[in-house]
Amino acid sequence: MKFIDEARIEVMAGNGGSGSASMRREKFIEFGGPDGGDGGRGGSVYAVADRNINTLIDYRFSKMHQAKNGEPGRGADCYGKAGDDIELRVPVGTIIDDIDTGERIADLTTHGEKLCLAEGGAGGWGNIHFKSSTNRAPRQKTSGTMGVRRKIKLELKVLADIGLLGMPNAGKSTFITAVSNARPKIADYPFTTLHPNLGVVRVGPEKSFVVADIPGLIEGAAEGAGLGHRFLRHLQRTRLLLHLVDLAPFDEAVDVAKEAKAIVNELKKYDEGLYNKPRWLVLNKVDVIPEDERVKRAKTFIKKYKWQGPVFEISALTGEGCQQLCFAIQTYLEAQNTLRDEAEEHAADVRFTDVEAIQKEQ
Image (cartoon, rainbow, N blue to C red; front, top):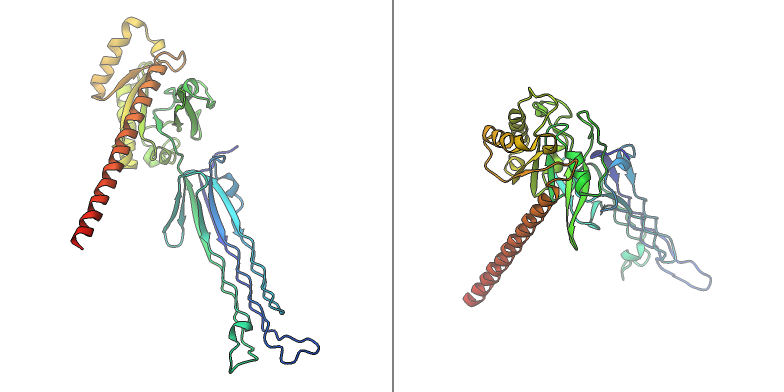
Protein backbone atom coordinates (compact mmCIF):
# COMPACT_ATOMS: atom_id res chain seq x y z
CA MET A 1 0.00 0.00 0.00
CA LYS A 2 1.32 3.44 -0.93
CA PHE A 3 2.15 5.66 2.03
CA ILE A 4 0.23 8.95 1.96
CA ASP A 5 0.65 11.36 4.87
CA GLU A 6 -1.25 14.40 3.56
CA ALA A 7 -4.69 14.90 2.05
CA ARG A 8 -7.11 17.75 1.41
CA ILE A 9 -10.81 16.95 1.42
CA GLU A 10 -14.18 18.66 1.74
CA VAL A 11 -16.82 17.53 4.23
CA MET A 12 -20.49 18.46 4.01
CA ALA A 13 -23.01 17.75 6.75
CA GLY A 14 -26.64 17.10 5.79
CA ASN A 15 -29.30 19.81 5.84
CA GLY A 16 -32.14 19.61 8.30
CA GLY A 17 -35.55 18.65 6.92
CA SER A 18 -38.38 21.18 6.78
CA GLY A 19 -41.26 21.05 9.22
CA SER A 20 -44.78 20.24 8.03
CA ALA A 21 -47.84 22.53 8.11
CA SER A 22 -50.59 19.87 8.18
CA MET A 23 -54.10 19.76 9.60
CA ARG A 24 -55.78 16.68 10.99
CA ARG A 25 -58.65 15.68 8.73
CA GLU A 26 -60.66 12.60 9.70
CA LYS A 27 -64.31 11.70 9.37
CA PHE A 28 -66.46 12.61 12.38
CA ILE A 29 -63.58 14.61 13.91
CA GLU A 30 -64.32 18.29 13.67
CA PHE A 31 -61.64 20.91 14.21
CA GLY A 32 -58.84 18.34 14.23
CA GLY A 33 -56.18 20.97 14.63
CA PRO A 34 -52.54 21.05 13.52
CA ASP A 35 -50.58 17.80 13.27
CA GLY A 36 -47.48 18.70 11.24
CA GLY A 37 -44.32 17.02 12.50
CA ASP A 38 -40.78 18.37 12.68
CA GLY A 39 -38.13 17.73 10.06
CA GLY A 40 -35.29 15.36 10.80
CA ARG A 41 -31.80 16.64 11.59
CA GLY A 42 -29.11 16.38 8.95
CA GLY A 43 -26.35 13.80 9.24
CA SER A 44 -23.00 14.88 10.69
CA VAL A 45 -19.47 14.02 9.58
CA TYR A 46 -17.11 12.55 12.19
CA ALA A 47 -13.41 11.66 12.19
CA VAL A 48 -12.41 8.53 14.11
CA ALA A 49 -8.83 7.50 14.94
CA ASP A 50 -8.16 3.88 14.02
CA ARG A 51 -4.90 2.11 14.93
CA ASN A 52 -5.48 -0.43 12.15
CA ILE A 53 -4.93 2.27 9.50
CA ASN A 54 -1.46 3.67 8.82
CA THR A 55 -1.94 5.88 5.75
CA LEU A 56 -4.30 8.53 4.36
CA ILE A 57 -4.49 6.91 0.94
CA ASP A 58 -8.28 6.52 1.23
CA TYR A 59 -8.57 10.31 1.00
CA ARG A 60 -6.08 10.87 -1.81
CA PHE A 61 -8.71 10.56 -4.55
CA SER A 62 -11.97 10.62 -2.56
CA LYS A 63 -12.20 14.38 -2.02
CA MET A 64 -15.88 14.91 -1.16
CA HIS A 65 -17.61 13.36 1.84
CA GLN A 66 -21.27 14.26 2.32
CA ALA A 67 -23.78 13.12 4.92
CA LYS A 68 -27.44 12.67 4.09
CA ASN A 69 -30.10 15.32 4.57
CA GLY A 70 -32.86 14.95 7.13
CA GLU A 71 -36.30 14.06 5.81
CA PRO A 72 -39.15 16.60 5.99
CA GLY A 73 -41.89 16.23 8.57
CA ARG A 74 -45.32 14.90 7.65
CA GLY A 75 -48.85 15.01 8.92
CA ALA A 76 -50.33 12.88 11.71
CA ASP A 77 -47.54 14.07 14.00
CA CYS A 78 -44.93 12.22 11.93
CA TYR A 79 -41.41 13.51 12.40
CA GLY A 80 -38.91 13.28 9.57
CA LYS A 81 -36.12 10.71 9.73
CA ALA A 82 -32.69 12.03 10.71
CA GLY A 83 -29.93 11.81 8.12
CA ASP A 84 -27.32 9.11 8.65
CA ASP A 85 -23.98 10.23 10.08
CA ILE A 86 -20.76 9.23 8.32
CA GLU A 87 -17.43 8.39 9.95
CA LEU A 88 -14.06 9.04 8.34
CA ARG A 89 -11.54 6.60 9.78
CA VAL A 90 -8.02 8.03 9.93
CA PRO A 91 -4.70 6.78 11.38
CA VAL A 92 -3.83 7.52 14.99
CA GLY A 93 -1.66 10.64 14.96
CA THR A 94 -3.68 12.54 12.35
CA ILE A 95 -3.86 16.32 12.65
CA ILE A 96 -6.92 18.04 11.16
CA ASP A 97 -6.86 21.73 10.16
CA ASP A 98 -9.47 24.01 8.62
CA ILE A 99 -8.02 25.21 5.30
CA ASP A 100 -10.02 28.45 5.10
CA THR A 101 -9.43 29.69 8.66
CA GLY A 102 -6.19 27.89 9.53
CA GLU A 103 -7.83 26.67 12.75
CA ARG A 104 -6.54 23.47 14.35
CA ILE A 105 -9.65 21.29 14.59
CA ALA A 106 -8.21 18.17 16.17
CA ASP A 107 -5.14 16.11 16.93
CA LEU A 108 -6.26 12.49 17.15
CA THR A 109 -3.66 10.64 19.22
CA THR A 110 -5.76 7.87 20.83
CA HIS A 111 -7.39 4.84 19.24
CA GLY A 112 -11.14 5.31 19.06
CA GLU A 113 -10.99 9.08 19.59
CA LYS A 114 -13.93 10.66 17.77
CA LEU A 115 -14.56 14.25 16.75
CA CYS A 116 -17.32 16.02 14.81
CA LEU A 117 -15.90 17.73 11.72
CA ALA A 118 -19.19 19.08 10.36
CA GLU A 119 -22.43 19.19 12.31
CA GLY A 120 -25.70 18.43 10.58
CA GLY A 121 -28.41 21.06 10.30
CA ALA A 122 -31.33 21.12 12.76
CA GLY A 123 -34.74 20.03 11.57
CA GLY A 124 -37.47 22.62 11.05
CA TRP A 125 -40.52 22.92 13.31
CA GLY A 126 -43.90 21.67 12.26
CA ASN A 127 -47.07 23.70 12.89
CA ILE A 128 -47.88 21.73 16.06
CA HIS A 129 -45.37 24.01 17.83
CA PHE A 130 -47.31 27.15 16.89
CA LYS A 131 -50.69 26.10 18.30
CA SER A 132 -52.08 28.39 20.99
CA SER A 133 -55.36 29.45 22.51
CA THR A 134 -55.57 32.32 20.06
CA ASN A 135 -54.09 30.52 17.04
CA ARG A 136 -55.81 27.16 16.79
CA ALA A 137 -55.12 26.56 13.13
CA PRO A 138 -51.53 27.74 12.60
CA ARG A 139 -50.05 27.54 9.14
CA GLN A 140 -46.56 28.42 10.22
CA LYS A 141 -43.63 26.09 9.85
CA THR A 142 -39.87 26.54 9.67
CA SER A 143 -37.29 25.22 7.29
CA GLY A 144 -34.36 23.13 8.43
CA THR A 145 -30.97 24.77 8.83
CA MET A 146 -28.05 24.16 6.52
CA GLY A 147 -25.38 21.65 7.48
CA VAL A 148 -21.80 22.80 8.01
CA ARG A 149 -19.49 22.66 5.01
CA ARG A 150 -15.72 22.66 5.46
CA LYS A 151 -12.51 22.23 3.54
CA ILE A 152 -10.01 20.45 5.75
CA LYS A 153 -6.43 19.28 5.61
CA LEU A 154 -5.41 15.91 7.02
CA GLU A 155 -1.78 15.53 8.07
CA LEU A 156 -0.35 12.35 9.55
CA LYS A 157 2.44 12.40 12.13
CA VAL A 158 3.25 8.86 13.16
CA LEU A 159 3.33 8.03 16.86
CA ALA A 160 6.59 6.40 17.91
CA ASP A 161 8.85 6.37 20.96
CA ILE A 162 12.13 6.31 19.02
CA GLY A 163 13.05 8.03 15.76
CA LEU A 164 15.93 7.00 13.50
CA LEU A 165 17.95 9.76 11.91
CA GLY A 166 20.84 9.56 9.49
CA MET A 167 22.24 9.84 6.00
CA PRO A 168 21.04 7.53 3.21
CA ASN A 169 22.62 4.08 3.53
CA ALA A 170 23.48 4.62 7.21
CA GLY A 171 21.79 1.30 8.00
CA LYS A 172 18.53 2.55 9.52
CA SER A 173 16.32 0.05 7.68
CA THR A 174 18.72 -2.79 8.53
CA PHE A 175 18.62 -1.77 12.19
CA ILE A 176 14.82 -1.64 12.40
CA THR A 177 14.69 -5.05 10.71
CA ALA A 178 17.19 -6.50 13.19
CA VAL A 179 15.40 -5.33 16.34
CA SER A 180 11.70 -5.34 15.36
CA ASN A 181 9.06 -7.01 13.25
CA ALA A 182 9.24 -4.37 10.51
CA ARG A 183 10.45 -5.48 7.08
CA PRO A 184 11.34 -2.39 5.03
CA LYS A 185 13.10 -2.58 1.70
CA ILE A 186 16.88 -2.93 2.07
CA ALA A 187 19.45 -2.46 -0.70
CA ASP A 188 23.04 -1.29 -1.18
CA TYR A 189 22.12 2.05 -2.76
CA PRO A 190 20.93 5.34 -1.20
CA PHE A 191 17.30 6.39 -0.80
CA THR A 192 16.04 2.82 -0.55
CA THR A 193 13.52 3.99 2.06
CA LEU A 194 10.92 6.21 0.43
CA HIS A 195 8.39 6.44 3.25
CA PRO A 196 8.36 6.05 7.06
CA ASN A 197 8.33 2.55 8.54
CA LEU A 198 7.25 1.59 12.04
CA GLY A 199 8.49 -1.39 14.05
CA VAL A 200 7.64 -2.70 17.51
CA VAL A 201 10.71 -3.70 19.56
CA ARG A 202 10.02 -6.22 22.35
CA VAL A 203 12.63 -6.38 25.10
CA GLY A 204 10.72 -8.53 27.57
CA PRO A 205 7.26 -9.55 28.80
CA GLU A 206 4.96 -6.53 28.48
CA LYS A 207 7.95 -4.35 27.64
CA SER A 208 8.16 -2.83 24.19
CA PHE A 209 8.57 0.42 22.31
CA VAL A 210 7.92 1.68 18.78
CA VAL A 211 10.68 2.75 16.38
CA ALA A 212 10.11 5.02 13.35
CA ASP A 213 12.45 4.90 10.35
CA ILE A 214 12.25 7.81 7.92
CA PRO A 215 14.01 8.34 4.56
CA GLY A 216 17.60 9.50 4.87
CA LEU A 217 18.52 13.17 4.89
CA ILE A 218 21.33 14.90 3.05
CA GLU A 219 22.77 18.38 3.30
CA GLY A 220 20.40 20.91 1.74
CA ALA A 221 17.26 18.90 2.53
CA ALA A 222 15.59 22.06 3.86
CA GLU A 223 15.96 23.53 0.37
CA GLY A 224 14.51 20.40 -1.25
CA ALA A 225 17.66 18.35 -1.91
CA GLY A 226 17.13 14.59 -1.97
CA LEU A 227 13.72 13.74 -0.59
CA GLY A 228 13.64 17.05 1.24
CA HIS A 229 12.50 17.30 4.83
CA ARG A 230 8.82 16.46 4.34
CA PHE A 231 9.15 13.29 6.44
CA LEU A 232 10.80 15.01 9.42
CA ARG A 233 7.35 15.74 10.84
CA HIS A 234 7.14 12.06 11.74
CA LEU A 235 9.96 12.52 14.25
CA GLN A 236 8.27 15.39 16.11
CA ARG A 237 6.22 13.10 18.37
CA THR A 238 9.13 10.80 19.28
CA ARG A 239 10.71 10.89 22.73
CA LEU A 240 14.27 10.02 21.71
CA LEU A 241 16.27 10.26 18.46
CA LEU A 242 18.93 7.76 17.43
CA HIS A 243 21.45 9.34 15.08
CA LEU A 244 22.87 6.44 13.06
CA VAL A 245 26.27 7.04 11.49
CA ASP A 246 27.98 4.80 8.95
CA LEU A 247 31.43 4.42 10.47
CA ALA A 248 32.71 2.53 7.39
CA PRO A 249 31.39 4.32 4.26
CA PHE A 250 32.05 2.90 0.77
CA ASP A 251 33.95 6.04 -0.18
CA GLU A 252 36.83 6.48 2.28
CA ALA A 253 37.21 10.10 1.21
CA VAL A 254 33.82 10.96 2.74
CA ASP A 255 34.04 13.13 5.85
CA VAL A 256 31.64 11.25 8.14
CA ALA A 257 31.75 13.90 10.89
CA LYS A 258 30.90 16.67 8.42
CA GLU A 259 27.91 14.69 7.16
CA ALA A 260 26.71 14.07 10.72
CA LYS A 261 26.90 17.81 11.49
CA ALA A 262 24.98 18.55 8.29
CA ILE A 263 22.13 16.29 9.45
CA VAL A 264 21.92 18.11 12.78
CA ASN A 265 21.89 21.48 10.98
CA GLU A 266 18.96 20.31 8.85
CA LEU A 267 17.09 19.42 12.04
CA LYS A 268 17.67 22.91 13.40
CA LYS A 269 16.49 24.54 10.18
CA TYR A 270 13.32 22.49 10.19
CA ASP A 271 12.25 22.73 13.84
CA GLU A 272 14.07 24.04 16.92
CA GLY A 273 12.05 21.69 19.14
CA LEU A 274 13.14 18.68 17.10
CA TYR A 275 16.74 19.85 17.27
CA ASN A 276 16.55 20.08 21.08
CA LYS A 277 15.02 16.63 21.48
CA PRO A 278 17.17 14.05 23.35
CA ARG A 279 19.54 12.38 20.89
CA TRP A 280 21.90 9.41 21.11
CA LEU A 281 24.75 8.65 18.76
CA VAL A 282 24.82 5.15 17.25
CA LEU A 283 27.93 4.13 15.28
CA ASN A 284 26.86 1.45 12.82
CA LYS A 285 28.67 -1.10 10.62
CA VAL A 286 31.48 -1.77 13.08
CA ASP A 287 31.61 -5.34 11.75
CA VAL A 288 33.31 -4.02 8.60
CA ILE A 289 36.10 -2.41 10.62
CA PRO A 290 38.96 -4.57 11.94
CA GLU A 291 38.77 -4.99 15.72
CA ASP A 292 42.11 -3.29 16.32
CA GLU A 293 40.91 -0.15 14.47
CA ARG A 294 37.39 0.19 15.91
CA VAL A 295 38.25 2.06 19.08
CA LYS A 296 40.61 4.45 17.30
CA ARG A 297 38.15 5.23 14.51
CA ALA A 298 35.28 5.76 16.96
CA LYS A 299 37.35 8.10 19.16
CA THR A 300 38.53 10.06 16.11
CA PHE A 301 34.98 10.53 14.89
CA ILE A 302 33.60 11.55 18.32
CA LYS A 303 36.40 14.09 18.78
CA LYS A 304 35.87 15.59 15.33
CA TYR A 305 32.10 15.59 15.72
CA LYS A 306 32.46 17.13 19.22
CA TRP A 307 29.90 14.78 20.71
CA GLN A 308 29.40 14.53 24.47
CA GLY A 309 26.24 12.43 24.78
CA PRO A 310 25.63 8.66 24.92
CA VAL A 311 27.45 6.60 22.26
CA PHE A 312 26.69 3.03 21.12
CA GLU A 313 28.65 0.89 18.68
CA ILE A 314 26.58 -1.65 16.78
CA SER A 315 26.36 -3.75 13.65
CA ALA A 316 22.77 -3.81 12.43
CA LEU A 317 23.71 -6.54 9.94
CA THR A 318 25.12 -9.03 12.47
CA GLY A 319 23.13 -7.81 15.49
CA GLU A 320 26.23 -6.94 17.49
CA GLY A 321 25.39 -4.38 20.19
CA CYS A 322 21.74 -4.09 19.15
CA GLN A 323 20.35 -5.89 22.20
CA GLN A 324 22.31 -3.71 24.61
CA LEU A 325 21.06 -0.61 22.81
CA CYS A 326 17.44 -1.78 23.04
CA PHE A 327 17.80 -2.47 26.77
CA ALA A 328 19.26 1.01 27.28
CA ILE A 329 16.37 2.57 25.36
CA GLN A 330 13.79 0.69 27.43
CA THR A 331 15.47 1.81 30.66
CA TYR A 332 15.48 5.41 29.44
CA LEU A 333 11.79 5.32 28.47
CA GLU A 334 10.78 3.79 31.81
CA ALA A 335 12.70 6.51 33.64
CA GLN A 336 10.94 9.15 31.57
CA ASN A 337 7.58 7.57 32.38
CA THR A 338 8.40 7.69 36.09
CA LEU A 339 9.36 11.36 35.91
CA ARG A 340 6.17 12.15 33.99
CA ASP A 341 3.99 10.33 36.53
CA GLU A 342 5.68 12.13 39.43
CA ALA A 343 5.17 15.49 37.70
CA GLU A 344 1.48 14.74 37.15
CA GLU A 345 1.05 13.71 40.80
CA HIS A 346 2.77 16.89 41.96
CA ALA A 347 0.55 19.01 39.71
CA ALA A 348 -2.55 17.24 41.09
CA ASP A 349 -1.38 17.88 44.68
CA VAL A 350 -0.83 21.56 43.89
CA ARG A 351 -4.34 21.87 42.42
CA PHE A 352 -5.83 20.11 45.47
CA THR A 353 -3.91 22.41 47.84
CA ASP A 354 -5.19 25.45 45.94
CA VAL A 355 -8.76 24.24 46.30
CA GLU A 356 -8.30 23.73 50.05
CA ALA A 357 -6.86 27.25 50.41
CA ILE A 358 -9.83 28.76 48.58
CA GLN A 359 -12.29 26.84 50.73
CA LYS A 360 -10.58 28.07 53.93
CA GLU A 361 -10.73 31.67 52.73
CA GLN A 362 -14.45 31.33 52.09
